[in-house]
Length: 351
DNA sequence: ACGGATGATTCGAC
DNA sequence: GTCGAATCATCCGT
Image 1 (tube, rainbow, N blue to C red):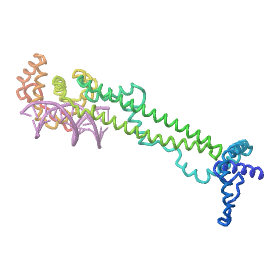
Image 2: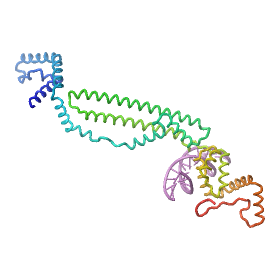
Image 3: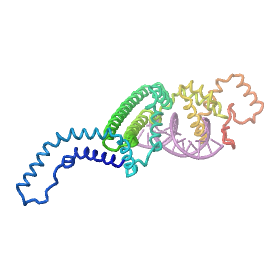
Image 4: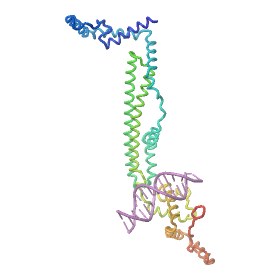
């Protein structure tokens, strides 16, 4: 056992030194200690050394290859290799591998979610147009800004394409680099102790580095999308007042349901259809109308009367006559004109 | 240009 | 989820 190891060591030293040192392996004489005393002898020595240097590579290559091959084929080589790997593992490289398996970065997850929501990443076409359509609906859904939407979609597609090509490029580069490094390490593992585990760790390091680059790409893509959104789809920026007709319809409903101006989902849908706006816009409108009406009833009195009169006109004359008759019968009835003055109850609801 | 009107958004309560 | 309330950003008549 001991003599086996000694032989391996000898062979190993031969391989190592042959490649890097003039001294070992070739039986070079040690440097002389008596310089200056024997000029001719010294010259002779230098000449010898130079000669040996000139011829060393030719001679050592074959020899080294032979020794290397011998070492690689030696039956104790795997055992020694694993021992060396173990020692290496213990001595220091394990410290660097301490921060294994990083938890999913919340920042990265946020970016991923946003890109998915905007339809930049994720399934082709479907997600993008869906997001654009949703955004379009939120922006107003009018016919006149469809040009802007197609413009937005085109720009989004552009961003999407850039993102995907860049991502692909990074992935390809990462794979290429990883295989390159792996091949290099596998190759080197024949002459120096590199365990498969170490190679694995190196691959992990490379992937982490590349994923941080990917994160930068995702970050900048997110920024680009946000800018695009704010430019094209921020409804506040491109707010259009509803058409006069739409406002008319909404007001008619509001004032004719003044006692309970909370349209049901069905009513909202119908109003949305009539006004060619979205249901959420109807909800917004009623929300704004209720609060603003309540805030200053006096200001809206004229409007209230106007729409009440309008609906009264559509009512049948028979009803109007009936009201008139009842008024004639009871002259003390308040709110002359057939519509009541709204007021607020203790529960906050408009009455 | 200014100020009120108006549609949309945000926030907290339910 | 809806609601009121406050607020923002824009529109539009003057």
